[in-house]
Length: 77
Image 1 (cartoon, rainbow, N blue to C red):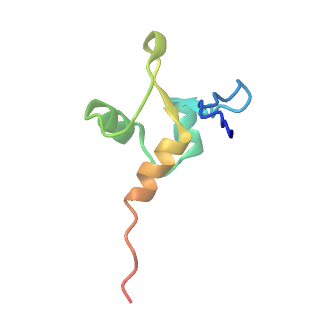
Image 2: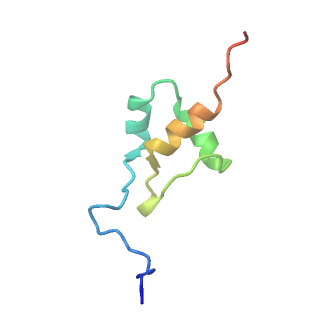
């Protein structure tokens, strides 16, 4: 009789994806195409994801890059 374990495997702590979180100041230094006013507007309109532990805005760089890439316009042929 073939018994296969179908239980989901939970990744250990090293295998989990931990987002690279940066502060607003760090984000502006790393992504110079964005202004502080624009980022704050996106946050207030809930158009980008963010974390706010202890009142400090933190952003996942991958999510910001995905948001910026989503606005890309293909060139006309």
